[in-house]
Image (cartoon, helix red, strand yellow):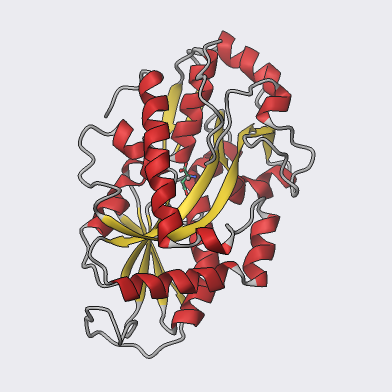
Length: 337
Ligand code: ASP
C-alpha cells in the first residue's frame, strides 16, 4: 500500500438554482459601492456546487441568520462546474461591492495544484470573510455493494479496480480529493464518475448507478441513518457524535486517509474593509445561532469558534492549506488538468 505519508490534514457553468433565503430588507436595485449604506440591495451567495449538496446545505443554514443580521435579503445561487472552480472564478471577477459572496471549501486550497490554468488566484483575487465549519467526510457505497467493512472495501477495490466506480463532484472537489487519497493509499486507479455536486452523486449512489464515494456528513448523515447507503468510515481522527457506530478511517485500517472539509466565505478582492467586516460580524452572529448549532450537530459538525470566523484566521488557513495540499498532490503525482 502506498502511503501519502503526510501528517493529518484538517480539512473543504450553469446557474442551476436560485432561491431567496430570507426577506428582511427593502428591495432595491441601485448598485452600491459598499460602505455606509451597505447593504441596500439583495446579496447573492454563490455556491459552486449543485443545490441540495453539502456546501449548499451549510450555505442555506447560515444565510438566514446572516440575512437577519445584515437586514438584507440573501439569494443563494448555485454556479456549478469544474469542481467548484467555475463559481469561484465568477465571484473573483464580480464587482467588489459586497453583493456577491462565495461559499467554498477546502477545494479553494487544492485547485491551484490541480489546475494548470485556474483563471484566478485564491490568495490575491479574494478578500476572506471568515471560516464557517469543518466537516468530516464519510466513505459510503450503494446499499447493495458487496463489501461490508472498510477492510472488505479495500480488498474488493484492490481486486476489482477495473470495474469499481467512484463518484465525485469534479476535479478540485472535496470528494475528488478524498478519492485521490483513497486511491493513492491503495495504489489503484479507479473509474471516476464526476457530477456537478455530491447532491446528485448521492442520489445516484442511492439509486445504485455508482459504487461508492466520499462525501461530507452534511450530505450523507440522513442516508446513512436511514440505511439507504452503506457507510464504512468517517475520515476524521474522532468519531462523529451523530453517527457513533461509524469507525474512523484510522480505526478501520486506513489511517492514511484523514480529511476534514473546511468551509469559508469570500468576496472579490478590493471589497471595502468595512463591508468585509460587516459580513464577518454577521457570520459570527450566524454561527452563534442555536438553530444553526443544533442543525450542524445533527449533520455531524459544528461552527468554527468565533475567532476563526474572521478574515485574518481565514487568510492564514487558506495560505497554509494551499501549501500543504500543493505538496501532497505533487507527491501523489497527480497531473494538472
Ligand atoms: N461535497 C462536494 C465536494 O465533493 C461539493 C458539494 O456538492 O457541495 O466537494
